[in-house]
Image 1 (cartoon, rainbow, N blue to C red):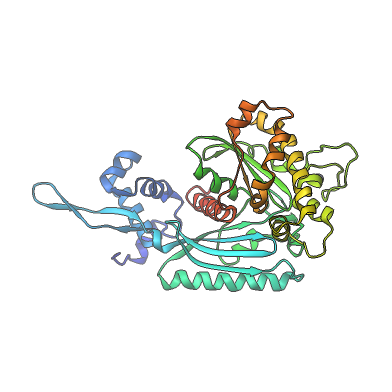
Image 2 (tube, protein in one colour):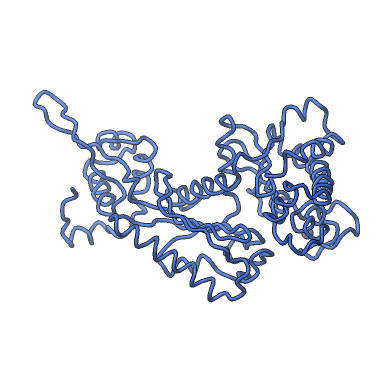
Length: 390
Ligand SMILES: [Zn+2]
């Protein structure tokens, strides 16, 4: 048990601010278990300040003392510290039309709370916000019950987001959120928040060998892509990066109008919304419906999907070359139909690539796009907490 710490000590050593203790916390996380002597040696700090950092992190509920290991001739014991993984959490809000998938995941990666709710048809922002607040209350309540803390929030929202402020510029599938500032919203609950669309990347690469040059496609309502080498994303380093806008690369001059205002974008041919529009069936309103139609034997839907897959394969060859990608995984909700249109996708690739190159890429659908998104988002949120300046 942590011992009580007098107020004057807390004040003197700024117990409310953990910034200076983060490198020690990272070391505990990376090594699993550490002793004070190991930290003193690795970080080159004094015994005294090391001890203060441990006390601060323990007081904040981030680390805990393990069994003491007797060392030395006189049986003097050494305290071993570890991360308190079960009592620290990330809150994830993942929007994938028509649903919101809300979950609370602890630092060991275990989902302890999960809610799914259909929200795409709710036109009123205030009602939407109150639904989210309800889940947040439940999540914060759960954390409190276990004596723990929610440390970081992560919002995954399809659409165009301002990379600097995190404000939702435009979301086609959740239009009620246009203009929504999730960071400010979470801040009101005292939660730092990350808003990024990279969750699926980190979720998919864990099924590939370490350090693979990977290209992960998000085949969704729109079309997105992220390339990287293992854990390191390389396509998003430049804010104007072509890949973050993969769906809005123009492939036909004066072609079909796109939601972004331009004409002839890739998305207008191969994105979920374009396929849904082309199908023109009132019962098929989102990508889940479209997948169900294709898998349920709707021939027109399958034809549309095949044509889109060919266009996609052909259009991606250039990005795959620039990123020097060695493996390709099709993620996102439309990956469910990829096995039925893989032949056409490969035909598209073969307009530029040799058979050997295609065999190396070996395009495969995600094993479980939702699980990938959830796990990857958790990884992003957790990393944001340990490395807030990245
Ligand atoms: Zn566009």
